[in-house]
Length: 155
Image 1: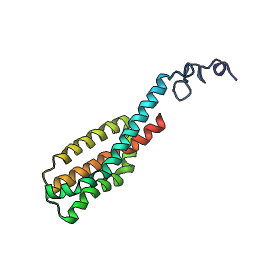
Image 2: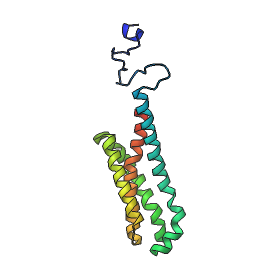
Image 3: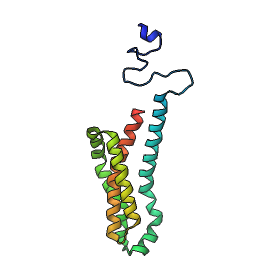
Image 4: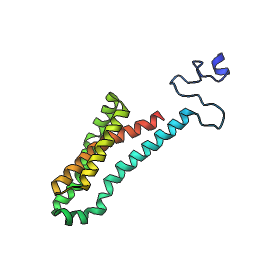
């Protein structure tokens, strides 16, 4: 055992492990690294909740959507399926984009896109505008979901 391990400063003598994370500190006192990890977990769980909720919450509103926007029977299915198809079809691309551009950028872009599409969906004036907004929400969700899982591994 080298001197760095004996005095608790980590492998490189800096108080950090080889990955650059804080080695802890006083027992029981959360260090900056642990607080950061907790925030990453909160962000990841919130993002996953939003993505999952948006997949299913629209089902409750389908009768009102039908009457307010004049959807036909088959057209109403696209309100649900546009989101699911865009999300599922672009999920792996969202992960790769996060690898190339960085998780913070992709998370920010995904949140902005998801939020603007949600606003557009709430302000939809026709069946086509709602289906388009739902598809764009799916694109934003496809960027968010892989980043949320990556944040958990970074925490």
